[in-house]
Amino acid sequence: MKTENHTWVSEFTFQGFSSFHEHQLSLFLVFLALYTLTLAGNVVIVTIISVDHHLHTPMYFFLSMLSGSETVYTLVIIPKMLCNLVGLSQFISLAGCATQMFFFITLAINNCFLLTAMGYDRYVAICNPLRYMVIMNKRVCVQLVGGACSIGLIVAMTQVLAVFRLPFCATKVAHFFCDIRPVMKLSCIDTSVNEILTVIISVLVILVPMGLVFISYILIISTIFKIPSTQGRKKAFATCASHLTVVIIHYGCASIAYLKPKSENTRDQDQLISVTYTVITPLLNPVVYTLRNKEVKDALLHATGRKTS
Image 1 (tube, helix red, strand yellow):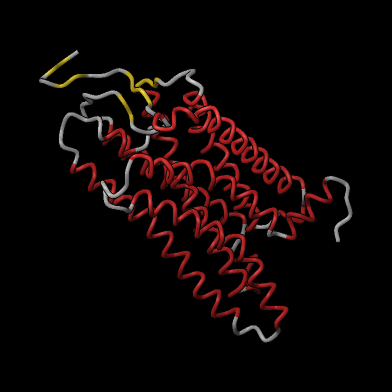
Image 2 (cartoon, helix red, strand yellow):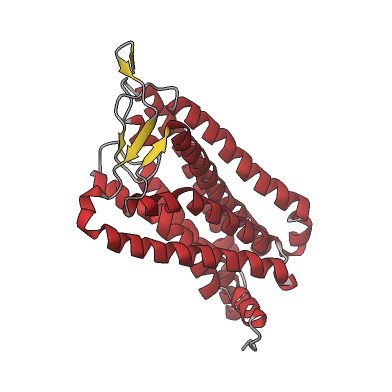
């Protein structure tokens, strides 16, 4: 239907990985394996933290919230992507696209600020250890998680309303999910205002939390170097290593995806970046925190009935 020279559409079609058509089955198997590992890993982390009383601390509370958020985040995107790869359903309604975008933005921003809260937790633990349990009490932890989720919800509502008020002429989304820029490209009108809004929001929700984490680690590292014993310094670094690894990869991918110039990458390069932060990064959380974290490894061994070393 056309109104005022604009075509009103009721559904979109994902082009997905059409440029890798001959490898779609291989991609399906790889992504299915990674997705299964991600779900299993995050479920194990949430379960272990819930049942092991030694892990009922602020740090692991934030980790369980991050794992839960990452699980839902992948559920929003990957099952639909897997269906597209095997040709089951490459269509999505306008309402479905808006819903997917809403949850994707909410959870992505929630994860950004949860990592910031975890950085603050490590700062208090190392720089103010005697008052750690007083400062990081249960009420503060819940408020930090609630704040992260609230920011995500507010930004998601703002972005989705701005994008879906646009009139759409084209229907083929050059992506495997309803991300902001690929959907905006389908509009009949100039989207410069929306582009500016997206850049401003991206700067605020990526650079601000990343800056706060960076400041936390400057203070943490300066405190660690003041610790007299080598063993004490190693232990302090060990408590931060897992979080710092996840932070660098998470914020790095987000910065490349949303802070780069609009036309800098090709479609295939954009999809590769998107695969990194929708498939690979959620898997890093359980892998890094189980392989690099002695307390989680000990809890896993205890849960499976094995002795800890």
